[in-house]
Image 1 (cartoon, helix red, strand yellow):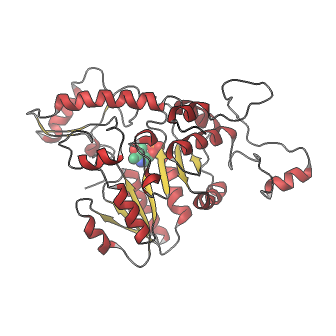
Image 2 (cartoon, rainbow, N blue to C red):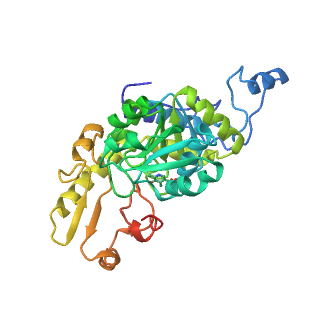
Image 3 (cartoon, rainbow, N blue to C red):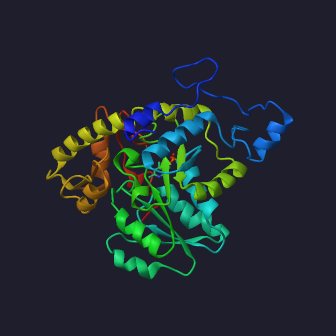
Amino acid sequence: MSEHFETNSIRINSSKSNQKEHSSPIYLSSSFTFESAEEARATFAEELPGYIYSRYSNPNSSELIEKVCAAEGTENGIATASGMAAMFGSIASLLQQGDHILASRSLFGSTHQLLTRVFPKWGITSTYGDISDYLEWDKLIQPNTKMLFIETPSNPGLEIIDLEWAGKFAAAHNLILVVDNCFATPYLQQPAKWGAHIVTHSATKYIDGQGRVIGGLILGSNELIKEVQFFTRHTGPAISPFNAWILSKSMETLGVRMDRHCDNAEKVAAYFDGNAELDAVKYPFLKSHPQHHLAIKQMKRGGGIITLTLKGGLQRAQRFIDQLAMISLTPNLGDSRSIVTHPASTTHSKLS
Ligand SMILES: *Cc1c(COP(=O)(O)O)cnc(C)c1O
């Protein structure tokens, strides 16, 4: 492993097959064979390393995990069929009935549904904290609080949570700190450096980068990932080898793509900043962003998302969107094609 982000993202490859290919092939194989009954026994018993069955692991998902771990500074991970499988799996595998989650209020819509409607069915409850007052969070801790779940920058509001504070707060209260790092990507921010125990991704977004496949990642220490691995092995959210292959190829270009996303976003944000037709322009690296000081502390650059608040509410926003000539109207992000979306009336309509 190199110290260079790009070198790792390009040069970490699954070991060559007998064909001596230069670029990693797609291992579309449900299962893997053994030389002997004894080798099969020992592999199942985890005495020998080796692939068994693609619900457990596969060379393509292993390559993707190894690359993203090098980028995030984490020991191990699991690749999942979607970002939500990663969010669900990270919570379901590490918590049990009676446990409580403390979460930041600004969360992805489906993550909010998990916390408020899915996990309570199994006795796992949660409370939301507000990032405007970190001192309040001490009062939200309950005797059964086991996890701190945050998203920074948040989707879509670009709220930024102080990762240094989160790491210290989690350590002081013995909580598992989970950070959804989808918006920043490991190129711009590595939450594990600040004490995150688990980093999750919707790989669908910037990691794919071209709007093709759905995928997710759960990354962390060997010890925690062992727990997650047990859960994913037996519940089955495995990523398809094809999708893992696409995402691993995409990692090769993540650095250059993120730099270009940031270059472009900086120009667009500067263009809109101060426009009289807008109530607000939000971009982490604009000085006017309420948590600009945190953004520059913990992020390399501001990312590829800008939020605009138009004067005139929903109708004005809809008129603005409908008059754009080239930008796609679609619920995704991190694509090579620029996208516009109105979260309040679509992806986030279930939130207050
Ligand atoms: C998209 C997204 C998810 C969900 O990921 P999928 O790949 O769509 O399942 C989770 N968190 C954030 C911040 C997202 O943007």
